[in-house]
Length: 283
View (cartoon, rainbow, N blue to C red):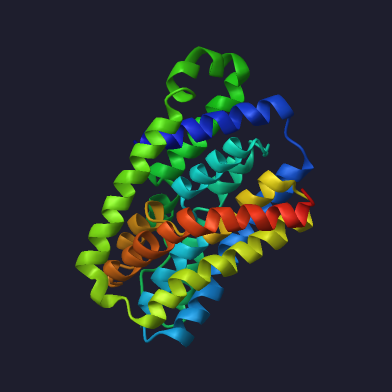
């Protein structure tokens, strides 16, 4: 199901860019996304060191997740906008793809200051940039951009009509996974970590809101920038951390990103981000 969702959102985003044509706003948004993805782990690392007793290694591993993005939360955000009849720029999916890797590099830089972790070499670059979710998202975006509306028309029955149903099933499955994670690893969630898992999405959303306002984005795209800033990865970054920081405790970063931040964003975050984006954009 995750492969289907990544392909569908990437393809439709590429079609939207083909219809509207790339412009200066897209380039600025991509640059802003990369900067935001690199900067948020630094903020998260500082908060973790102040609020918890995590080691620098574990704190950096957790921080990487909060600079990267959750594509499922992003897809849920687009569904909220569709249901509300609010338009957004299709190229926001390209911004989402651009925000996957910089957070990982930021975390590795944080760890390198303490002399631990894996050196940043060619093999690590390949592991990061050729991660399956990144390749699929960027690849489907490129295919949609190249084929345009005629390409979408040919496969609309596959990626348009079933999309909402597949998303519902995937979110239900993620809820079950999050529940199991909380049950089996709930003992590691000290008050400081729990507070961080809720505070950091709000910090990231505020940074995303400021970025969207500076770029002059509308309500829809502004909300999606907030979603990207607020979400925490649980697909691409955990895979990269297992390679780059194998000594970091995966129970901590998986439980926080999937068991705390993910449900918070889906239940309370998305309506809040939409309301704030409406206030900023004036509608």
